[in-house]
Length: 299
Image 1 (spheres, rainbow, N blue to C red):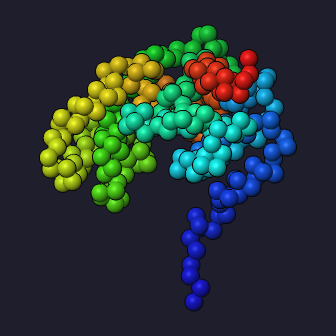
Image 2: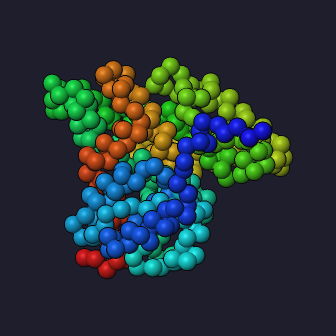
Image 3: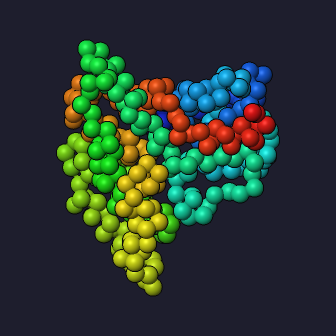
């Protein structure tokens, strides 16, 4: 009897080898090949990179490595190659001192992931007006600063828990233990707030895992240290926000905006990311832009 194939497994997926082959085929169209980790977001990354480099560099395609481990594997062959630029999420790598050094063509984002750069006030207002053109951007009652701070407050303890789980490799000690891959719905209270009770429950799971696998460690000291590492009390975009997993940050912000403007609920997360990327000024990525220009010798 033929084994059954699930619906999800029946959908063809592009493999890492596919993306490698695509890069070879498309080389003639690019002066420089830009590589990112995330699958299914090539057009969003193209929009961002075209905004940063479109006036200086010719490229028609963004390439995908399908994850940071694959990025590092490719760099064993392509280390310091002038025409291949690899850009990876910061994740918790800086805090954990896991960033790779001495690779000229490898660049880390300065915040957790690309989503952490997309929540610009003007682009959010444009998004709202695009869904209801009778509104005017200048007259919108969007409490932008309050919303950003609210999102950061909601997510900072959960981020501390994720950081601890990553630092102590709880997923390896306890197979199935999940961190940032957990859906945000698991921690929601209502539609637009994080439940303190649910986060506390998750912290208890983290604490118990620490007790089980690191009996010489004090979980409370570990939590306090984590809070200090991620600038728990510094509610700014370059404080705690740069350590918050971007998919959580942007999704919770989307939900809070939807509460203020209910007609925005039809806008899905993926659509929101793409549209924000297209409209953002992205001055927050100037350091990345300057570093890559310097590496390529572009003035």
